[in-house]
Length: 498
Length: 118
Image 1 (tube, each protein chain N blue to C red):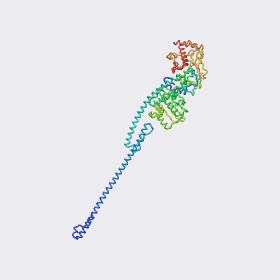
Image 2: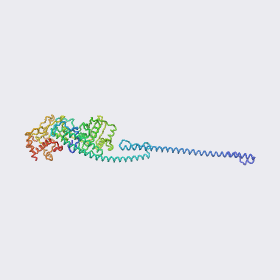
Image 3: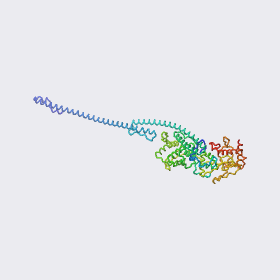
């Protein structure tokens, strides 16, 4: 307290001064005191103010921080809401339609969230769960609809197939019964259309998971391809170039026929009407390849990819997704190939600029076929030499014994060298065990000459021959001449084809 | 060609004849005899080859050829007339031309045969 120290205590100076001086002194003192108080007060005020200010600054700073933090948070929340809105919009506009498209079979990929930062949020997880459930339900519904459609279609096609089969039998019977070329021409047209109809029905039912139907016995590869040719519209444009003495085992005849028919139809339909469709066989180490070349338009990469996917037969075919007009060919081929164990491929390597389709049949689906069936010798009539009425001899009815019939002049020199005795020496002993028809007439059958049988005595007079032998010969002759006068009946008695 | 009548023929007649129903020549009846005239079979379709194989051993009637091929007679006639056109086969008319002692003898044989049977 330096201010207070300047004033001496009142007792020391006060009693010895005059009253005026004392007053003056006290005035000075009081002013001094006042001054002192003022100073003190101002000091206190200053201190208070400073503290207040300090506090205000601190508070302000803190507030600032809180505000900025809030602002940031607010901004973040706003951003999140915006992102969420955006994602929702994207979900509605893009993701759900993409999923719907995916279920309609379009080759689209269902996209993820628009903003990668959104991926881990709980909202996105919720959206994913919803999409998953949606997909599951859609899949189930689609499967159920597909199954229902397939079952219905299969049942309908079965009816159509059996009708076409019956119709074909009727047509075949009529073809045998009618000799008039006009009728035959009409029947052929009907037969052709019926075969195409049957193929369509067959293809559809195969797509619906049915079997191709129709059991067949093993057939030569050439016949398989020609059988397939029978069932397509432009059958005249198909050329089978090479021969192969292989046959297809009975189990896969019909599937392979159907496969080749679909490929041929595809080839013919996608090429100019004046071009040919060529079929070749190429034998390989472990099977045979049927190569079908057309001179039409080549397939582009996308089509090839689609074809490859269908031909692999791995994915189940959706009959609701075949397009309009339905493109069943490759789908059917794929199903058959996968089911029966052969391979089919298509590419644009055809030498004629079109498409080359290759059906590869592995060895286990093939069997050997004797391309050279034993020649049917002319004497299929079980009659004696003398009474052979309809053979190479122009005037056959000779009662008198005749020497072996000389070769006819019309035959080439090659045929002249044929040993005539070969067909003279047929096994006559077979006569007795020959099967008889219902009317007691011997059945005709192909006779294989053995050459070990006793030669019938060519010179024996006719009267010495056993009566039943004569009867069988005469009966055959009679039937032959009668058959020549009347139109042929479908089951001409006595003809046993073997 | 399967001879089994129950089984539908795999190769249909329109493919066998190339869609033609009318023979190029009208010379065939059921018992007309056909014979191979040439041995080479190149360029022929499988049915025609088969006809050539059948006729190699001598003469066969049209109806027999049809039976062996498993084809309708009318279709066989189309094939055969093609083969006649291309010179692969020749035809002969069957049946007796004259009546004489031979046929009397034949009729006697027929009578004997029938008596023996009945």
